[in-house]
Length: 178
Image 1 (cartoon, helix red, strand yellow):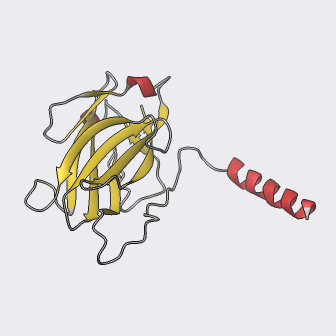
Image 2 (cartoon, helix red, strand yellow; image 1 turned 30 degrees about the vertical axis):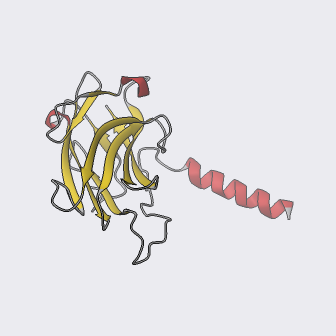
Image 3 (tube, one colour; image 1 turned 60 degrees about the horizontal axis):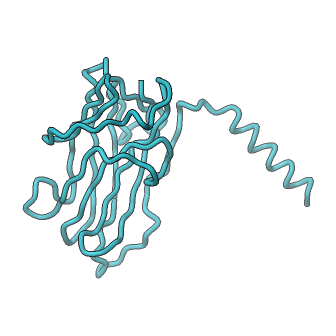
């Protein structure tokens, strides 16, 4: 039994050693099972188009890069949510694939009759002074506390929350900050 486990662990280590750290595929889907009478928002899809035009909707293998000197640091986030009621969406940056310690860059309430409903696209910009902004909001967020040295791997996190309860779910993409 120990020999089998050792062989499996060794095989996994060899497979991981051959991985290019810049090529990461994240499985984007919710673990929450939704039913017809479930009123919490369900994040159906989250995609990011980086500064070089790499779109996760069609290419999930190429590393995403946000570069303030290429195309003025413009990138795009888009999402699809199944929600019968209003929900809050929040785009965040982090140095790990979680919400813990993340820095909120953009937040909006979405729903019927609002600028974002079941799906939306927001244009964002990454600036050379390590700040970001999204949408028509003029609020600029300092993300420098997440950065030790450029280029650096970070995580672009999208969270959706129910406005009537504490229910939230999120998804993320690894991105290289140049």
